[in-house]
Image 1 (cartoon, rainbow, N blue to C red):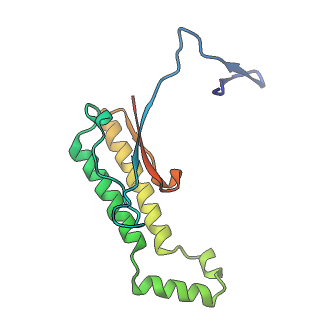
Image 2 (cartoon, rainbow, N blue to C red):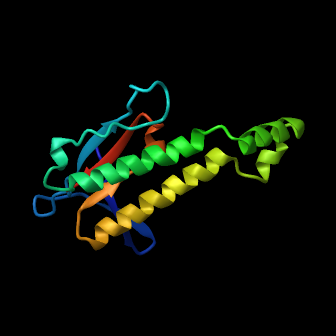
Image 3 (cartoon, one colour):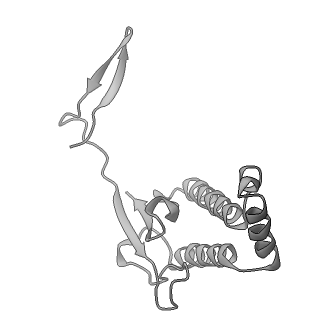
Length: 147
């Protein structure tokens, strides 16, 4: 059961229940599963779902999925800098993490910015599609909402 919207009324809130003349907008969702074909690396399947056929072009879908896969590959990459991060973190009893972001945290912020930019571009283009950050679903799946 969903929560009713609230309407301010002189110091108190009165719930507004949807009526027959005000149906709730219905949003459809498509979930893109993680791709485990290459092991446990964080990747999403690039198979274009049929539900998005008239809502989003296949090229746009592939661009988004490849961008996600590239950003996550960069986040999980082991470099000399990540090794130094871990050593410094251990030497400071992890107090360093209170003032500095790790490479993974920086990459997750880049993913959030990418999702926001894509949503803004789709709104400007007139598409009624919303992308959700895969971190919201604990990286198990990627959600696309559409009308």
